[in-house]
Image (cartoon, rainbow, N blue to C red; front, side):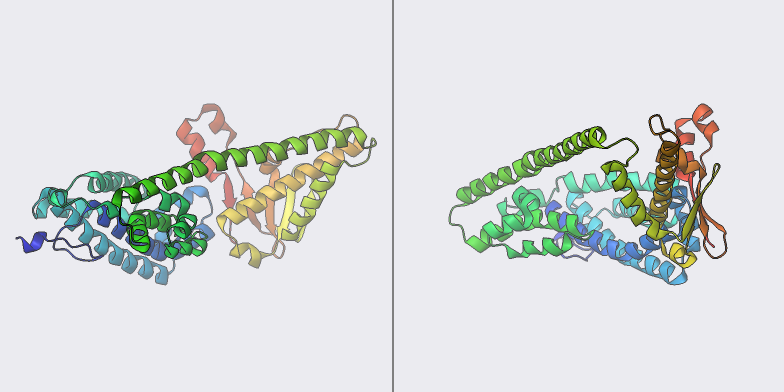
Length: 393
């Protein structure tokens, strides 16, 4: 039994125990691996959903996915699921102080069902996802009966300076591995690597600078953590907000001054900017026609089929904005001093996207107005998800 409770910090292995820090490290690696396997399916999902509500209909969308994606997801999930279960087994062994087969199986079953939630109904995903979150918090914060008796190791403490400062912290502490954040920070793996740096920070910094005094080392790292915390949570946000307010104020003064100095009947700079944006937006369309009841925009069918749901939504929104701008200009031409203002929100319901080749309807915004009058919050949310409709040619 003693051999079954030996320290085992490897990524894979069912025998032994694992402490909280190494458990967290291993699960960061497992999450990074899982992202590799789920990303192709996620890309396919958002390229093929017709409404936002479809994005939550996991089981139906999985059935519709290509065969190679099904195989990739199933085998990939089985692979990183096995890695996760092996770590859960060892963590529970440490918490229980013994090998408890029953608790190991129950906790592992919850984890496995939650990670397969991508192919289950949405309610299953929510229920088991919540249980999995509770499980993760217990495994992470519960003190192990066995590892708690081990001598304290300061190099395994979380380093907030390494997490918040990453590569800048790394330069000060000769930990050049943190420079990988320049590449990984531009990918979905960036947060995982920042956490990895935080977990490994003390170990790297103490080894690389060869400190003789542990207290001086800890004091140095605490000061660095404070500096990076102030930069991250105070100085940078304040500068960002000040920049936004500054730009907004300049634009407001420019608009007011432009309206005063522009001769009546001539387009203002803001209107010229709107026309310029419309010119850029029109590159997405093969043509358009604004009528009293409908805004028709035509796109290339092959281009449309390659857009994701988010891109299709943006294109429909841009078409509505163009329509609002054109209607406003038409109204201003009739009455320069008291013209009607049109917004994107006004134009969305009557804006439609058609195929330039077949003239078939490809996209529209359909909102049930009765839902807002009599529907519950749940009904309103569902109606909002279903408002954007996109079709295949």
